[in-house]
Length: 325
Image (cartoon, rainbow, N blue to C red):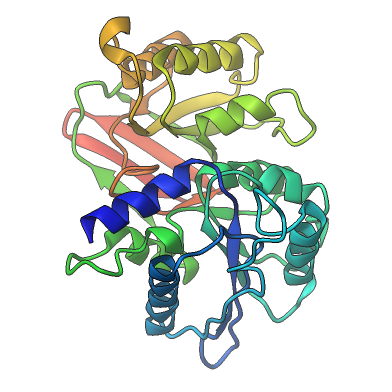
């Protein structure tokens, strides 16, 4: 089983694609319809895992079903051509009965699909779009529309074959049902004390850096709390991205930093600093409070966050609190 999980997680990080569930619920009882924008060529073991993920969602009182493209392979690297994936997303956005779209897995593909979808109907009929990593593209795009979204785990990460309590999945459940108020974390050696208030934005550093200066990039004119996390990058690339964002002026509205997980960063020993050290240096340069070791990103614990919602970050000697308003 450990070998299977390693294979599954490795597939998530090579950028295969993007898939989604869509939740539909009514006044009396939550119901969910599940769709997939794209997904990889799927072997038998992975299909079994996917089906167990659906069972988890149903256990939350939701009715879930797969997208027609979940097991497809018509798009080469992707499960379907960009236009098809974008059209699928558009149908979900335009469906007034659907209340949330849950992306099944990360990798790469959100940016290409968004070229074929119009997010503006979400202004008048908002629904949750949830995911992380490559989904940072969507979080940034939605913020420009004034629409909140959820940065959190995705079903492909559900611990369906473990007896351990899946706190990341439960956090996503709480966020979807509006039961998320905030978090408290233990003190971390790199914490920078202080209090800040702003709209929570950000996500995956690599994606944020790639969007810098593009039409999808958020203007960040109001006070911002910036979430940062990444996986599988070289330490010099982490430094380059942070330097570029700071020098471009795109961090001028940042009032606080939430430093999530930086996993499998190459070259830290030779560089003499960790990725977290570089983020702490950024916090010093911006003169803002920062919390480190926040459970968000590609590590075992990935707790859900409301992106685009105002929050207060308090960092003290005894620990930190991120509280949504």
